[in-house]
Image (cartoon, rainbow over all chains, first blue to last red; front, side, top):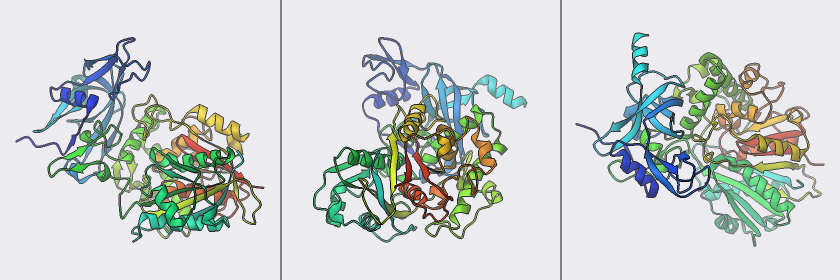
Length: 143
Length: 387
């Protein structure tokens, strides 16, 4: 049986658009009409040109690890049974940086490693997350 | 600038004060006013942290302050330690107020713990609920388990080690040098909560990993207590004072409360802020005798040494491994033990250490210290002994 997510977002406005899309296993970003700047986290205004006319786009799902931490001590009892787990900052190829866990990787990853979008699938929520790309997995399994 | 820090005050630091935060604030402010040889009736301004739960109005009534001309709050956490003082000093220089108190009071151990996530997550019987878009613990962070400040700072740390090709052993030696040296300083600080608990490098290295690469001793303390600082215009007084030679607070997009989305998460402030601060003071970094650096975690100290020009980019690990931040080193850092080892009043206790150093009355006095830099990421001040 799939378990429930221990922490859920109570998202409003544009954040709710992001989380609604995640429930369809899409990671959405905003892109401004005048110049095509792409951003996250959601905002009514482009952080580069301050335009407020934008469209939502689907991220391709490809990115590289900007940084990471492997968490060995739970900062809240709700995630105690995740320990240890790995949090990533991922630079998506579209530009924006997003936060997500690295799944199916027991050790510490290397910064700069390519990752691919996936989702943590709970009974009540889907959360954007990442896995090492197939090429990276193959390399690791041979090393 | 012309304003001076005329008095400082602190309560005892404890794990369970048994008092309200208002009561702690009153004790600290009365101590600071007594240090300045002033009565509560002289106060006409308060600048507080937005995070503080002691309201300015409640504190005004509790102290018997008849009328305020300045009341302001500084947001975004620990940078308010220097931000409150910067705004108070500017208000005094501008004539908006004549005697301004900055304060921070928290039951940070027995009450709400800033190092944990409980304060941000509300339970409804089932799953916990996150709200807002702050990092850590907002809706884009909490569902992925990014819940505490230490975890965000661990992300800075790994990126720094990557950018400068520093291997794990060398990095641990550098961060450990901060933790061990500050703990050693705290052994001769009667206020320090870690007094009597020395720390060796071996202790540090075998300490529990919290969020890699940060271990338990890379993280600051959590405790109850309050601190207060009284600023006035320059005045005749039998008590020594610290002049605020320069002060500033800068904010760049995506740096509040902790940077994870910005272009460079290994820089805690900007070249503009640092350049303007030293230009306003009319001194160079090499003239600073002692640095008081906001140390919620050790990595913040390492990054700040580079941000403020005390080390070249990538040079802090070597500086630290050579103990240049220790007694007799090139630049003693946090000689009270810092938030890591004295205790945590959200950085305001560290501002007080800067004042003590230039008043030449610190417990671990840097001999002949005349200039102190006090910084908290993008907010900072330079203090000098007042004539």
